[in-house]
Length: 417
Image 1 (tube, rainbow, N blue to C red):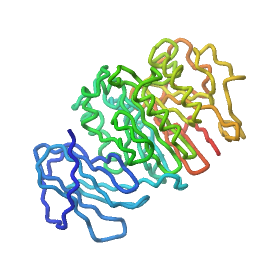
Image 2: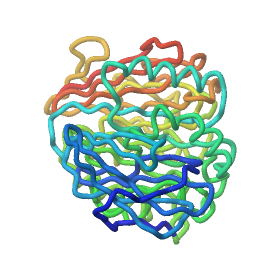
Image 3: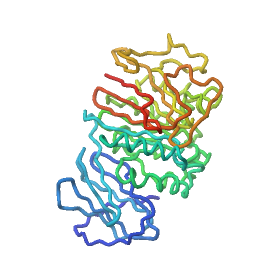
């Protein structure tokens, strides 16, 4: 079980050997707190030294208990404020606390899927995002599952994720992950994957939304944006998965969506309801069941964007309503609800808008083409170039871009309310 250290000490002469093999990385970011995690090669004491931007005085959070996996909670922070920290003289980081729910200030989200596989495409996607965000940094990072190939093992997370993303991203970004089938090693039991020991999710509603009391699924209020992470792999005690349209996770999802009052909503998870890339939503039961039993919930509560991975391509649908059947049954005249003031620029009126579904699963793994490709409901697809998404959200505008591995913005859409 993960132990979180809360003890605040008033001295700064705390010493720690420089044997850090993983981290630091930021978890469960809220408007007033953050968990800073790291791993050492041998048992060590834990210390975080925190400095508020513009202030010289530091604060030390420390504990003398010697552990390998360190989780330190830093509390008493202020919303939308910058902080720098160190966990040893050679391990520095900085972060910007989460805005309060409803804060109209624009926030930038990076969405990455199927990325924990060392490949030239992985490196190209990273470089494209680094270059794209030079002038406007990322605020929060969401993962769409299959984070570490092939079986979500400790050594795979180390080699394919931490060793690759540590320097440029992990010490500085609020991270809100979601698991995939490879993270579960093909099982449906949350006691199996190292994922749940590596990451710490906000389960008590501390980051916003309805408390889930489960690290498998949770929600976050990020300014004008409500983020919901769900788990397409976990079975509850009764054997239900979310795509069964019943059970603990489905019931929580319905309550959380019903309680949300923020202008924009993204739901993200691993297995998509629509895809004709490396997976086929017409024939694969989990994907078909998501479409038939969970999509009606997304429509009922006016979700703006549903993000998934699993299929190693990029696919974006039109704003859909009522398209729960197979690919060939799609009828644009009756199953698209949208008002466009220009191509891919949607204005949501009193009648609302359909849900846009995006498969964003080419963060490293790439390619695939099932019978029926491309989706009949799609606006844009790409199974030849990898990429990831940047989403900028303010009180009245939602601007999503797919930044391809070659650095080009190959797809973009805007939602205005």
